[in-house]
Image (cartoon, rainbow, N blue to C red; front, side, top):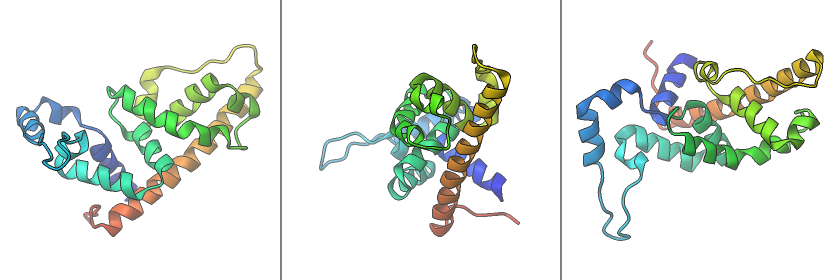
Length: 178
C-alpha cells in the first residue's frame, strides 16, 4: 500500500525522465497552455500537467501548507531546485522551533538546512548529494544529532504522507490494485 502512495506522489510532484523524453508529452504540456479570459493570466505548471497537476493543486489547497512543502522537498523534481528551495524556506521555521532537534542545529540555519533537507529527501536523491560532515565535534555528538534529525524528519514525512494519502483516498484519486 505504501509503494502505491509513493509512486503516486512521485508522479504528482515530479516528472519522470521517461515522460520528458517522450515527444508526445511535450506536445501535451505545451498544448495545455491557455489564457484565462477573466484575469488574462497564463496557466500554472500544475494546470499544464493534466490529472497529475490537478492532484498537485488539490493537495496544495487541502493540505497543511508545511506538510505540502515537505512533499515538494521529498518528491519534487531533482532539477527543479528553485521550487524545492522555496518549499524549504516556507517550512524551515517549523524545524527551527522543533524542540526535539538539538539546539546547535536549530540555532545554525546552515546546519539545519543541510541536515534536514538531506533527511527529507528520498534515499535515492540523498545518495547523489554526498555526506554531511561536521568537524570539531565528537563522533558521539554527531551520531546523536544525526539520530535526532532522522527521527524528527521521519515524523514530519509520515505526517505529510498520511495526510496526502487520506486526501487522495477520499477524493478517489488513489486506488490500490489488489
